[in-house]
Amino acid sequence: MLSRRTLTMSGIGALIAGGALARAWAAGGPAAKFEITKTPEEWKKILTPAQYGVLRDHGTERPFTSPYDKLYEPGIYNCAGCDLPLFSSETKYDSKTGWPSFWKPLDNALGTKDDRTLFMLRIEYHCRRCGGHQGHVFEDGPKPTGLRYCNNGVALKFVPKAKTPS
Image 1 (tube, rainbow, N blue to C red):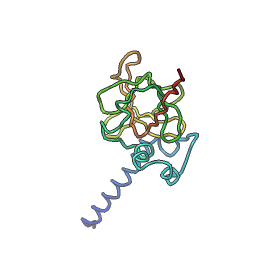
Image 2 (image 1 turned 180 degrees about the horizontal axis):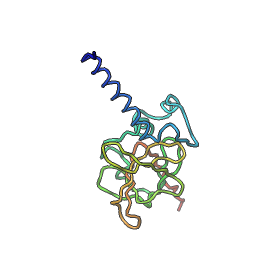
Image 3 (image 1 turned 60 degrees about the vertical axis):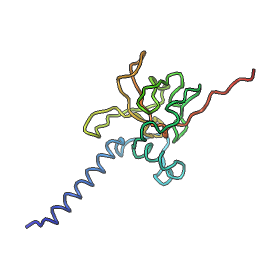
C-alpha cells in the first residue's frame, strides 16, 4: 500500500525530473553541438551571474534594465559569451518592449529552435557559435523583415564603430 509520503515524494521527483527534461529540451537538448563549448564551471569563470543566467540557463533579464535598450550609437552588438558579431546598430529600433530589439541579424550569426516553455510556442534564437541564448524572435517588427529579434541586453557586448579622425 502506498503512503501519502511515498506519493508526495514520487510526485516531487517527477516534477524535478520533468523540469530538468524541459530545460534540456528548451536548451536544444544534449545533442546540440557548437564550435565553442565549455563546462558550466568554465562559463561561470568568464560570465557574470546575470550573463550566465541568460546565456547558459535561458533566463530573461527584467525589461527596461539594459543600457542597450536605448543605445543608438553606430556599432556592432556581439555575443557576450564568445564575441561573435550578431547585430548591426543599423537594424536596431525602439520596440518599446524594454529589451534591445533588431529587425535583422548579421549573416550566419544565429541559430533558432522551437521553445515550448510557458505553455506556448515561441522561436528562441541563440549564438550559432557558442549556443548562448539571446532571446526570441516575433513577427511584429518593422519593415522590411517584419521581424522583432527581442534580445537580452546582458547577452550582448556593444562594440562602437571606430570614429575616423577629422
